[in-house]
Image (tube, rainbow, N blue to C red; front, side, top):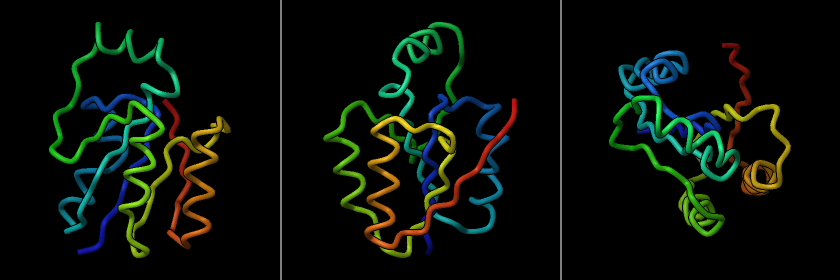
Amino acid sequence: MQKVIYLIDQPLDKRNFKRFGIELMLKEGWEVEIWDITYLMYPEYWNYFNKFYKKKKFSKYFLIKSNNQINFFLKKLKKDSIIIDQAAINLKFLILKIRNYCKQKKITRISTLHGS
């Protein structure tokens, strides 16, 4: 089974789960993981989200809280994995590091932009 990883810089709620097409990928038989880097990218937004929004529960959801943690996940990637990069316009160091890693390891990365 092929794996797709959603790299998100917005917390996972019911709206984003639907908007990103995650349910469709699951129905099509893909193994889906969600790597949420919101905590690292926008800690002030993460705190706000935790207070006022209901998170979507998903068994393969991973909240990334450190660079060591992202390194751990990157090293586990297989070459046939696909990353759907929802942090498409962000050029912070962490995003560039992930993109460069994928390029070096020849891992497919699809960059998407979603409006509100």
